[in-house]
Image (tube, rainbow, N blue to C red; front, side):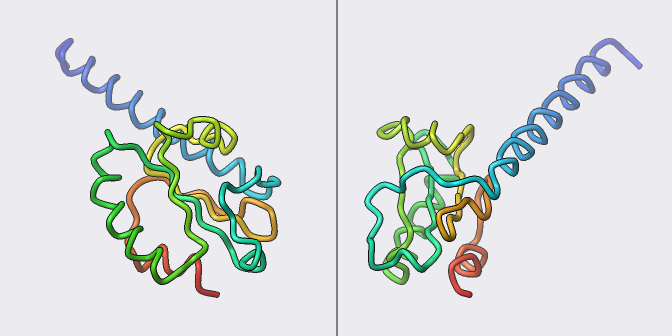
Length: 128
């Protein structure tokens, strides 16, 4: 194998390991007590809350945001958080990449999803 082939293989391996580490770090939060949820409606406290962390510079976020906005008309318990405007909340939830979805049930983080997701997947998180 040539030197270029070895370098490419090493770079691909590092990229995959980095992605796996991000997923592992995100999943470690499941079961932890959730930090205060910004702008939470007290009347919906018995419902799960979905936090959508996004960034204006994120390509998948730009295609996912209109779908999230449409779902917000259906579900009042979805909150969009622009990490470029509210970095403190993103840090509290240990968000390292966008888009990230954090599902909070009964005051605890019950799921963390990284990357672009479909409307059906998001709806399934919110409908018991």
